[in-house]
Amino acid sequence: MVNLLKFKMAKVSGKVVAFLAKKGSGSGGTYAGHIFTKIGGYESITELASQLKIGSILITGTNGKTTTTTLLIKLMSNDIQIRQTYENNILNSMTTSLLTQEGDLGIFEYGIRNMTYGIPDTVERLIKPIGVVYTTISQEHTQVAGIKNPFEDYYKAKKLLSQGMERGTIVTNCDDPRTALIGLEKEKDVNVNYYGIATEGIEDIGGESVDCPKCGEKLTYSKHYLNHRGVYSCSCGFKRPEPNVKLTNAEFSTDKWILNIEGDLFNYTTSKNIKLDLELKVPPFGFHNIYNTLASITAYATFTPKVENIESTIYEVFNNLDMSFIPPGRFEVVDIGGKFVGLGQGDNGDALKINAMFMNQFVDAPLEFIYTTPEENEEEIFDDHFKVIKSMNPEHVIVVPGRKSIDKAKEYYEIIKEEYDDAEFYPLSYEEMDERINKLIELARNSEYKYVIMSGCGEEQAMWEQIKRGLINR
Ligand SMILES: [Zn+2]
Image (cartoon, rainbow, N blue to C red):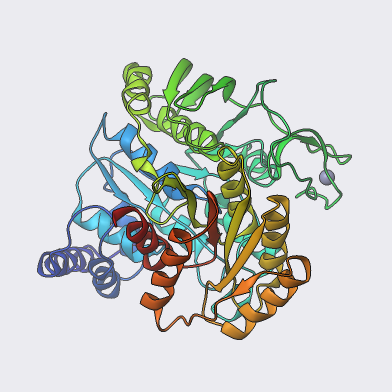
């Protein structure tokens, strides 16, 4: 039991700090949460979180969580006032949001890299979420803050975020065997709403079979959708669950995409079953954003208290969507005077592959690949990246360090050079980030190719967003 006086003191102190620091709403600020926790102790967070009338939703996954959170916030804030954080992965920022914002529902992005530097089970225990939303789980950095982070530990950490849930609903991608298994294993405790693709029109877009997350055998796929996502089964009995919300048809053209989505799912807030039948017109936003659309629509329909508004709110948000919903630094293709440059973050194999697929929609002439490398001890990411580079069949490759180590970048370059003998290397240092950014802008601008892709590792805001601004604004 939390001491009430201690809780009140913590709350007042946290609010004072927030006021003094003049942190606005949205994503900013962790200090108020830090002070609150320091005075009130961890357990006070539970008291704070329990003041939300509906509860909290946590969004996690390897890729797509910021976009999914952004879309979910757009949808939900049509209906009710919410407390929110995105692009911030620590408990203190959630606590700050709970403390300084108003609303009956909390929507919090929560990205965890491993169990040493994230505390997923503690977060679950303290926040007691009514919902955990999973996007997709794939291999990310194999090393975090100098500690080796095997995929099994990374997967386990993602699992732990919902493992203790005794009420609420899990929203998860059934086309991804890893996120599907998390749902299947929790069906005995909570409701699970799955989303996925169910149309004959989409198949074999960059597919790749992975091992069964349950028994370790290789999964058999009857369909591949995107990387390791698809329709799969295993000899152990594990197979893809049926989606509650599914893409049933898609028509792609260069200026708009038409997506048909059907749903039959459980709404947690009203304990009602609801049906959806939608035809959305969206910008040609890349295949991966179909999953972010499905994730956000499923989460919204699962948790909104205004069930009668669901379809009209979805139309309002998606039929008016422009590309600005893409988070800063993330991959997009820009036209700089007749030259098409696809640029942005791609710091794991899955992400770079998605970028490559997005870029390939445009390319009809030789391509130059400007690649920013991973760090030391990230050879596995490099291997995944190099496969993607080769799959795009670039005519010319330029290599620039994406992280700190120039020596390691040079090693990666040497491997690339074995296949692309006129590949160039620019040993630009991390410390002189402005110089690195300016050079990357110059390389894209002065490229002799009509199509340039510039992607790989690098900080989203501090590097990619700056390069985008430099390239688009001049
Ligand atoms: Zn199996």
